[in-house]
Image (cartoon, rainbow, N blue to C red; front, side):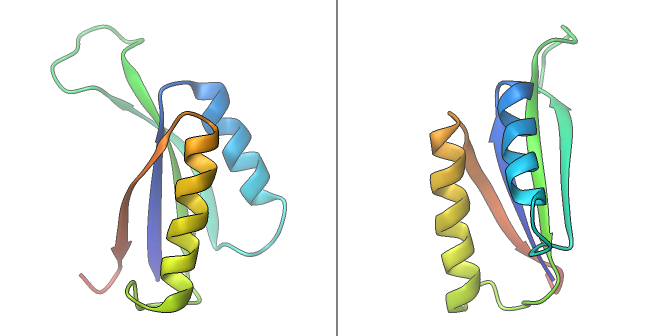
Length: 91
């Protein structure tokens, strides 16, 4: 299983991306999460995350994982976000 994490500053952007990715059964899960920014006390100072789990691949260095990372990077950038990390469950 591999996990991808896209980060957005706006909740609407994160929800739009999650909705787009949830339209098909390609991914095991697609969730929108919020994360408070380090050192911030204001409840509005949060990043919005789209957490995507792919259970059909395990090798984060493989061609499929790299292609998905490229796809998610472009999708996040289109919505003023970024791909934060790529994690394999074996780590």
